[in-house]
Image (cartoon, rainbow, N blue to C red; front, top):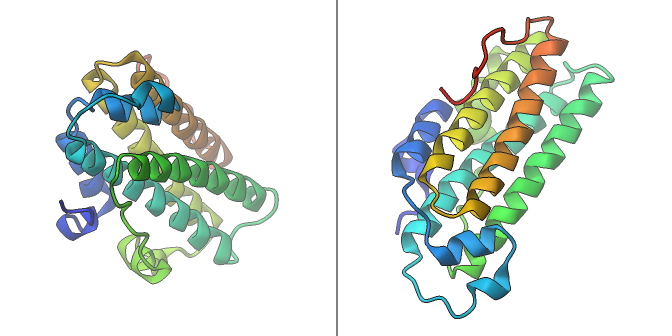
Length: 197
């Protein structure tokens, strides 16, 4: 099982496409565990290797987001209160990460390792960030991609609990994106059904 999804993709966009392209239906065991229903998962027999791979791709996206916010916070380019909001958003991505790691481990899998900050800096072209708006634009782009990735997998889930979890993750990402573009002074989306298309 390949738990290093970054080996197959060089850009954040490619990894999100990989997430959407590799998801199918998670097993009932994975659904129950990710939804926090461990007791329901006990006694279910299933091959969970595909589930672990899918969850590891989502985990890779969360690692990327955590490190993107770390790069922004450490850049010295973010001013208060924007810095405080970036740290808050990073903490929410850490909570997503922790839930995914716990589920992967409960399924008997090995969570994909976080890369070094330098690897993320190179991948995200952090050297091109010159001011607060540059950092916020990068974060907004990543949050929009994550929103669409999570929304894109909801229809693949046969279990309502897992669809709900994916919807909640997408809601967090959408909130982040909306707050970021608001700070940037960009207009909110004017079309209905703007996300997940």
